[in-house]
Amino acid sequence: MKVSHIIKFLPVLWLAGCTLAPVNSTSHWTIEPVSDYDSGYKKGTEIVSVQQSTLRAVLSNFESGEVDVLDVSQPGRLHRKARFNLKLSQGEELTSVAFHPSLDLFAAVVDAGNRPGRLEVRSATTGLLVDRIVVGFGSDTVVFSENGKLAMIANEGEDFLFEPSSKQFFTPEGSVSIVHLSQSGHIVSHKNLELANMTNQEGFVITEGGRFLEREIDWNGDGIISKNMDFDGNGVIEKKKVVLGYFEGHDVFGTETKGEKKIFIPIKNRSPALLEPEYIAITPDSSKAYVTLQENNAVAVVDLVNEQVISYYGLGVTEHKTDARYDGWVNFDESMAGLREPDGITTVGNGRYFVTADEGDSDSDISMPIDGQPTGGGRSVSVFDAATGVLLGDTGNQLDEFAFANKVYPELRSNKKGSEPEMLVAFDLDGIPYVAVGMERAGAVELISLADPVHPKVVALGKISGDEDKSPEGIAHFVVDGEHYLLTANEMNGTVECFKIVRQGAD
Image (cartoon, rainbow, N blue to C red; front, side):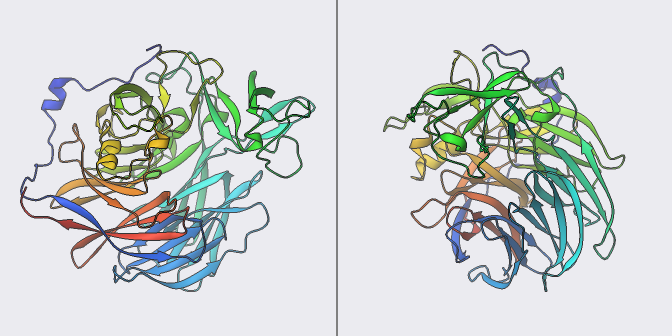
């Protein structure tokens, strides 16, 4: 494998000194669907967030720009209490919502395209605007701290513009916003944190062949993203690579049969323009936050006391067996090395560990494939020591194998990123930490035991109902009368599925 740095593993003696949660061998768990909620739209239900104290949930719809407030107090019968239209302007998109942990408020984030996005704080009962503030470019995710005193926004800054005269592609830099709230939920202060050049940071994997971001870009400036495009102007749309311009001195290309829907931006360095914050996990004591930089296979660590980025963790490569070919057969017998490229992130163990869902979001150099280069996407869930960024362990190929055993493995995605773990949520069952992860391409949710963080174990799977594409994006956990439940927001069929985590007696 031709890489410049590989993440370091913990020494055996250090692991021996860890205090791990006791392993409970008296029961096991299943995930059983109990109900669903249909938004009335064919797609768009993307992010869901629960307020445990009132057993209400907020649900975003990126297609309609609306927020639904759901009653989840009777998990077998989810129903809508209210629907609020945020009345977005043309070109704006609702990208995320979060329920305040205690107040009758929710936060909504709006991506305003080539302008900075904004955070809106609204009443969960009336939908009326309480406060708002402009944040960074490409605002993508919002989360609250457990004490409700601050909100954080990941400003991805992933939109690219093209300047025909110079043939240059441009993109705004990503950032992280910290917003402090008063006891009534009004905005007190706000700060945008810039991200630094990480090219020479220890632990980052630099591939010789390079990788590419797939981006939708209005290359010809007609205001439409065309699926087919005669890039070279010869009058024929062909399945061939065409150089369209340059980004930071490197070729940008497109394929005419994919058009402006998939223009390939080269990742040749770790410049700030390529750092795109994706999701955020805040520690229970609100002292730190961990931010996934998915396309860069990294996590940024934010000191929330001093409001600064204090370090970056390169997440390295996961190596395991997989089914790497779409050929009508499923055989988990080929070795793969994959950059984790995490999407979702959460903390467990009172902030001692952070856990990533390793979805992947880049392609290798398809013009010059180089043997031994890691692919994009780990197809795994990984556990890291939060203080050092050192890898404890990952699920290997358990996620795909469990999906196959439950007849939901998407074989047509084998040569891409498999079942694609997307977002995850952490909680305890009988005093043992677990995470539940949505599997975007498998249309399912999987439960992972972290009783031994060095050996995370997939223990259960719940299938989202229906035969159409589901694509679970957001995921949330809540408790009713001591019973544990999960919600998945399924963006491709416009629904929310509710699952119950059920104890199944002795092993």
